[in-house]
Image 1 (cartoon, helix red, strand yellow):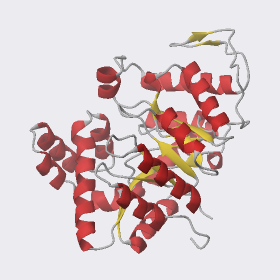
Image 2 (spheres, rainbow, N blue to C red):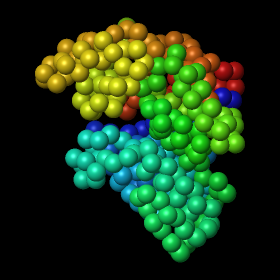
Image 3 (tube, helix red, strand yellow):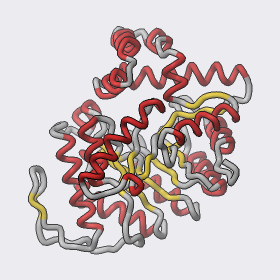
Length: 338
């Protein structure tokens, strides 16, 4: 059975009851993992603890928590607690988030995110290995303390949501998994190549790193639902390109969509959200997202696998309803014949 996971957000418009219902169905259908992100809604660890308590097999994973919001020591404590609560099903997905979220919400300076990520990975791994944390870095100077609880797993997987070249290299050097968003499937081999080269230089093998792109998915049952899904996903994509600073705009430019990304950003900044969404073209939707009927969507997921994804992660657009999410989860469930 090929591995597939899902990502659930912490949005206010989806009740905790619906969130748990979706996670339980994914567990029943054989999904590998349930990733829960964190922005300024419900926090990931509390939500995942609730999911862990009502599921049996599915891994419970942060996807992602930003490093700037917690110390490495607290993250080690939190993921170990989640591993205990879930009886050994925890995965820690980390990322830097963006400057606006970190500085305007968390009040932290968005300073040297790559070096900070490196220190987080090294310190957390040291703590999870049941060793005293003696560490002298650029950001953290730690000594003497040792984690007072032990995880169930001997090796809790650490994933990194890297996008830029330097962070991709860090993923290859230190992480157990790669958890990007907004990935053009045609670009996957080149991006994985950067991770592979870095892994080799660190004495590691790319086969030891799970390639887990989060992909916006929506299975439509008819032409009306398909049209609405295209509009909703275009709005979601335009929000990231135009409204989330330079981070994602630059990513789409690197993927070869500079003309579209520049136009989307101009429209967004001018306040014309409808125009911004309309500038998301068919190639962007086709290469980066998975929208269509069941057969089309499963075929598009297969394209990501062919380009190197070992565990695609089904994600949902901002306007997805619990019922549409359930429909997509059921339609894209793993099967022995895939």
